[in-house]
Image 1: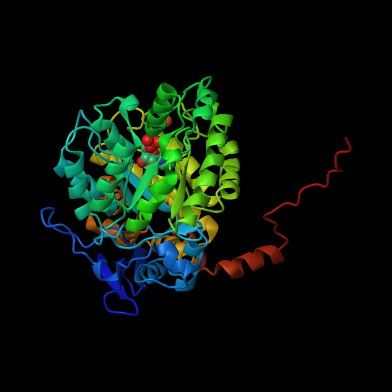
Image 2: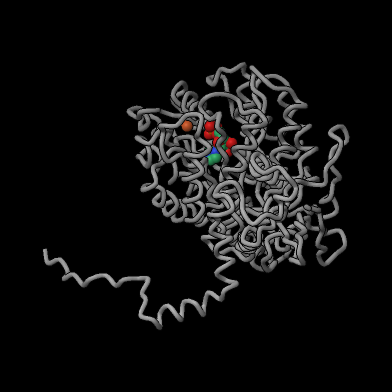
Length: 511
Ligand code: IRN
Ligand code: FE2
């Protein structure tokens, strides 16, 4: 059984949620990170838990002044790490705690390479499909499956209203790409965009409580021609809008030229920059090219500029990248952006599997997470094909939670392996119910098992239908254990038996 539990901090209003998985046979419960929030009726919204903590300083300014804010204490408990580590990583710019003053409903979380790898889920209406209620349902659904942040990428009508409903009901930070709404305001013609109109749009969204915003300020005029010979050109929506504007006016990107003013607005609300990768590769052929890395150098420059304003920054990354070119992306980003958290879209490790891009990209996501990427933007099976529905959101979330946890294990995050160990033990001891409850997706695990062995007696049986009763390796292992595996092997060795035959020695190659 899963139950929500709270761990209290130094003051009684710091209550950190966890999902406690209660196990049978006297096994200790396992405490899991929980993003599902307190739950509410969509018309009322969530309680404003952070309201008493909101101060005039950004989290970065507080961290630099040596102050551990209640939000920092909250995430330290959540991550099972010292509060001082949280403060120091934020102060150094290596982690961000996205929390707009006007989004007090959010439960604090942290994004940085020293912490658990996070997953973002994208939702949002488009001109063709979806309603406000459906989007709130998708938000709740995404956080139920572990989304650490959600981006509202709505376009089309009722953007403001959809976003309001999402923010008021969101226990996780909400991100947006404000250029999408700005483009709606000029009826879809990028040439008509202006800095003033864009500025009003970010203020409108800031007032509502958007916690982080994707800003494509690195798409500079001289970089646009670098994408001309690519197989897939510019695939970023925001990137293509800004490239169109730059070319039409033959002027430098107004997000770049007004960056300092934007920083002052972001500081007022404590909004975190997510510097957009408008020139990310959209195909294996375009990975790691000059357009992509030229933009990354500019994102590095902008990172340092935002820090001067006490504004938190993360940096977006690709895209489509084959496995052997992934590490170079992380190494360069860390170097150029002073260790600011990297937030990548996959990357997709091959282009051949439309309808399965949650898998092609989860492979890249696991790798890039292991190398230090702090947050992974999920990709759903509908990528390149259509707007994801609820089933797609779940498939994308599960694929990405696997990638993120695999990376946490590889990085040795404190406590990450406890979950695996508890599940392995339940599996070995044939505690089927415990195995289901500990599963990332309990419902599907249980359903698959019950397809062939639905009887309740099968829940304690020492086999499943994969191998049947006679061929279950775990059952045979139990019998070996009962016979004293150690003693048997000693007898075997004493009688001259060998399991591993040493390899013959071959002389080394000379040339
Ligand atoms: C993440 C990393 N690189 C891109 N992303 C996400 O992709 C970004 O945060 C946004 O949610 C989505 C679409 O961005 P573009 O296509 O406007 O760049
Ligand atoms: Fe793509």
